[in-house]
Amino acid sequence: MELHMQSHHWERRMPDWLAASVAGLVGGALVIVLEFFWSTMVLNESPWRPTHKIAAMVMGRGALEEMSLFSFSIVGTALVLHFVLGALMGMILAAIIAPFHFDSSPGMLAAIGLAFGIVAYVVNFYGMTAVYPWFASERGSGPLLANLLFGVVTAVVYGMLERPTREPLR
View 1: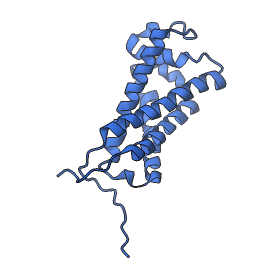
View 2: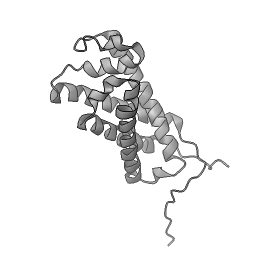
View 3: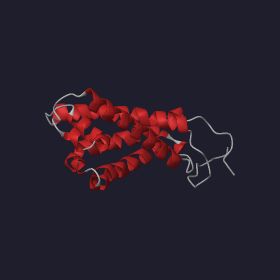
């Protein structure tokens, strides 16, 4: 009987980009649902508040006016931007997972997803506030939990959807 341990050393291996983007969309869908739930049920605010803040990234500060009102253009812009960013983040996560073989087990994927979620939270709510200062007010346990769940769900879904590669790139 031979025992094979999975090595997590770097090996030139391309991620499955389609699986990565779909995984990011799934993680993004979870986060947007959590944002709606958190703002209405926990913070007792309008569910449209997060969408106004997200849309303001591309629409400008004008989107921050009347944040309690529904606007199709603001909500649509926020959802498109949110899902595009989710797919991109899924691809970044896959670019970390694939070459180090972090897809060796669901537990390893979850651990990498947690670490990625922490980094994403810090970048989103501390780094990006230099450009988008209205996100500073969103710092806290709810968004942190959402980013952690995004990372875990995206990593695990990527592991489930990833198609096996034939040979590592040389």
